[in-house]
Length: 266
Ligand code: KIV
Ligand code: NA
Image 1 (spheres, rainbow, N blue to C red):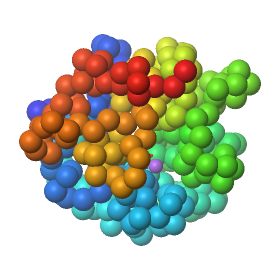
Image 2 (cartoon, helix red, strand yellow):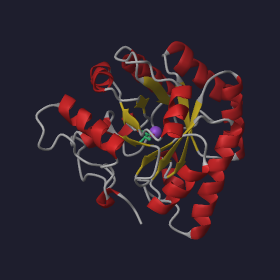
Image 3 (tube, helix red, strand yellow):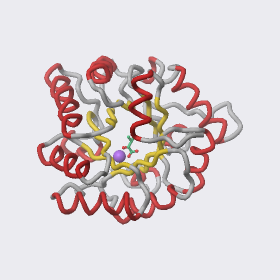
Image 4 (cartoon, rainbow, N blue to C red):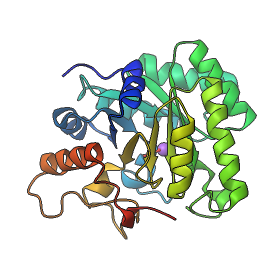
């Protein structure tokens, strides 16, 4: 398998080939993503919830992100590695650049992900990209803003918020982002953003029209405690191995079978 690259992801969008993304936090599951031919492994700060057991992603530190990114990197060869900038890594430009340097230079990520589109985030995106660190933006239900939202709530249901998220998507692209994760928005907004942008849009709870999909691996293996989020699916149910579940996810994302209407918001 040829290594997945940032230009390669752009080519996939241009050719209409859907991009498969899953989170990973350790060596062994990263190796499973690699074997299944998953395009992108995301070391998400969701590890604060599914690995560490916190109620949000806010307690995750840069040291935690570096530790997990290093472990995941050892399991990958062709799969592209993206790592989240943790809460408050965007406090100022020196901290953002230091975080990017550690996640890419020290830990082996090829790209970092940052939430939001506030002016200082747009500056951070440009500053990272200027230093040859590709950036994945993240809009919609951005979990680091859980206290601002008053919970993990779908964003963009009202026309005004939808228009704001649409404008933010164009702003992060203009700032130099090479990829966008769009989370927890109505299907129509997912479609509108995906059609308007040149960069690939990876959806999670953003409908079937995105250029690719991402899920938290614990969710898609059915091992996250508590209720399964509506936008997720247990791909291990009825299958006999983790490898088969990941392969089924990849096939269903590529064919467009996932997400189905029951995983989407209207
Ligand atoms: O932290 C994470 O896992 C994420 C994805 C859900 C997009 O940011
Ligand atoms: Na995240």
